[in-house]
Length: 136
Image (tube, rainbow, N blue to C red):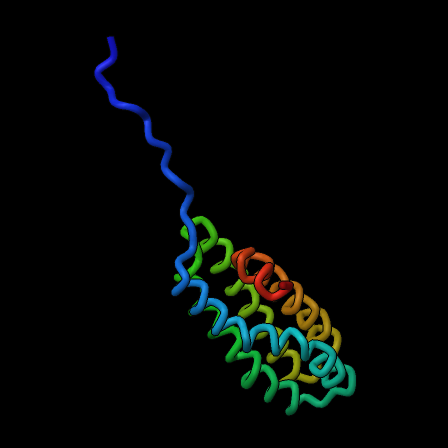
């Protein structure tokens, strides 16, 4: 004889409409910076270090800040990986900035590639509902 009641399966956590709207709002700057990848690459290639610094401290800084605003709105299981990737973006941006300050094109270029790889990783962690809404 069993005393327990029926087992109720707990549904997996899902995003609220408010969370999705917040995330979508913050993604705008990140996607805009992603689309400007070639612009930063050309600045590094042509050794325009002041403009590289301006790009890093302007649009890139905004995108990085938006990443930190997105993380708490993600599902708990996605927060730690997203936080790590956002930190990686920051670390690589610091290295690009330091390389620009010293005129080291090789280090700037390799960390520039790492920044955009990190941005892609971050975007891949976003809720699939946002990606499917954009495609539709």
